Length: 173
Image 1 (cartoon, rainbow, N blue to C red):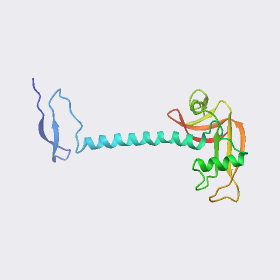
Image 2: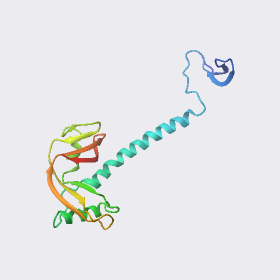
Image 3: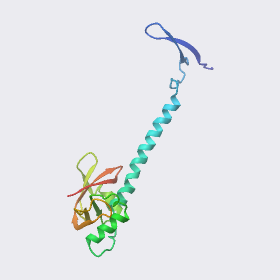
Image 4: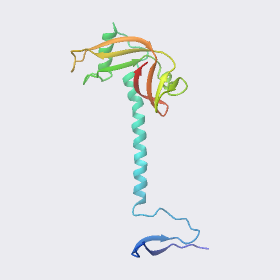
C-alpha cells in the first residue's frame, strides 16, 4: 500500500481559507509544518553551540587568571604580583584585585565535585585549604604601569562552576 500526500485548503475559525497545510493521510508520519523549519532548527543548534563555546572558554580564562602552580619565583609578594599581573595580561587596564592559587588544576576541578560543598546555584566552597597569593592594586596606581601589593596565605576558597569546571574565582573564605 502506498500513501500519497495531498495538498488541501484548510479553513480557520472565521471560515477564511488558507493554503499550505499538508494532509498526509491516516497513519503517515508528518513533518514540521511552516515556512522555514530548517532555518529554525539551524538557529536553535547555533544558539546551543555558542552557549557551549562561551561556557567552555571560561575555564581556560580561569586558569590564566588564577592558577600558578608551582608558584613562580620572585623576590617578594609585591614583585610576584607586579610580574604575574603583567604576564597574565591583567595590568592594562589595571585590575583592582586578583588571587593566584598555587595548586594543580585537577585539584581545583575537584572543588566542583567531591572536594567542595555547593553553597549556591553554581558556587562551591573548597573543603581543603590552598596556598594563594592575593594581589591588590596600590592606592596611587590607577593606570599602567600598575603597582600591586601582595599577600600570601593558606585559605579555603569559593569558585563558580559550570559543567564541573571552575570558571570564576568568587572569594577567599
